[in-house]
Length: 102
Image 1: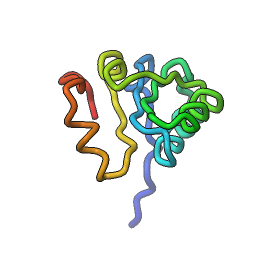
Image 2 (image 1 turned 60 degrees about the horizontal axis):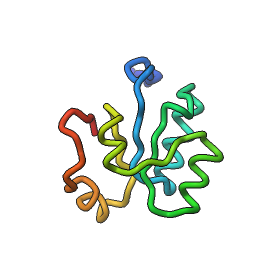
Image 3 (image 1 turned 90 degrees about the vertical axis):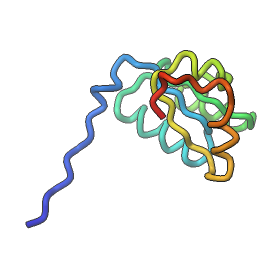
């Protein structure tokens, strides 16, 4: 007997500001999925150093670009969308808050 996968619910995230670290291919996929699922652009903060990816995140998805420090301060949920070799540099910084869910 094969069990069909249950659709995921975003109910636990409703009303929360979600931070996405990285707006490359992985980050764009997360932004697209969250927006398609009904998360408003004003509820999405993006941390991204590249100007072209920052523009895409704001223009296409309505997200706001912020610093890592601000995202860690404002977001109870941070999604890490960077290459594995970049993750340690992002997560080892002093501004990732202990209350954030990564």
